[in-house]
Length: 366
Image 1 (spheres, rainbow, N blue to C red):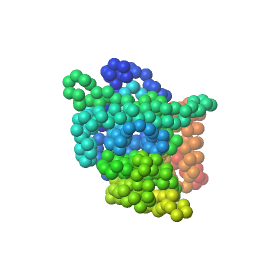
Image 2: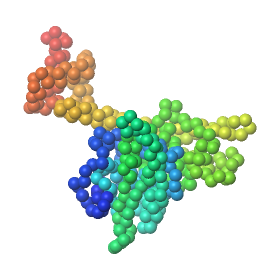
Image 3: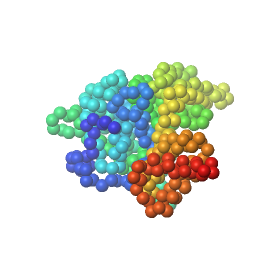
Image 4: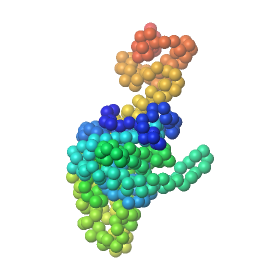
């Protein structure tokens, strides 16, 4: 994936250092992955990044704003592939500004550093398990520095704190945020509400049921404001939902909501999220890619050459779908092991096709 001006930097010296040891094992960093390219706007292949629900909803405190959330999510996608491997990351501020400019967002030199400082003062709290013991953990969500000499706005060096990395890479529950759609949102509450919706979009019933008090807390609505349901709906809820619904392709879903009375007052809201057809197809592609990736990792772990699902499907077609391909594959590898794991001179695909056709002929009594 093309990532302009992105490089790994030493935490102490701020210079490139390819010899730095990884902070975590490959297994710890092999979880949910982003999709698309944060530098390229593509409606058919949107840039998405998984963000733990602790960061999205309840456990974050600090001075961060909606703009700061956009920057944090964008930089998370930019650096995701290298999280936990080699210290921090470095990216051109001009390149960041170019993306935000195209999406109608802030693009001056100073806003990124101002935003980075607020993010560094923002903390997240969560539980984590090490061995058989559970720990309460608190950490900032970001760290950054810019050069004093030369052009101050040239480069942003940044880090995602070490305790947060395993939570990001292996989230138990997460929202898959559409980075460019998030940046385009301009309403004060639309950014957070969209992030919340993404945390519930993949539920089977596509619903989010929340009390008014909880929603006010999540959206950080100031105490003493919009306490009447009609004001809350008019000033907070409706503008945010309308903005999200104005671009179903970008959001990947549409939203409907209903107020639930507790006595004489509206005490809860039920949001119903309906995914677009394009999103359903994209998510199916992500799941298929994950299956293929898991399969290749399993084969690699067993010291076997990569036999693709496509080739297995082709062999099934050639043998008229009469064989149990899972059993054929098991027998194929068992035969290969008994033969002493010989090299496949014509490739593993050709060998598997020949083995499958042989099984097919046996089934016909030839």
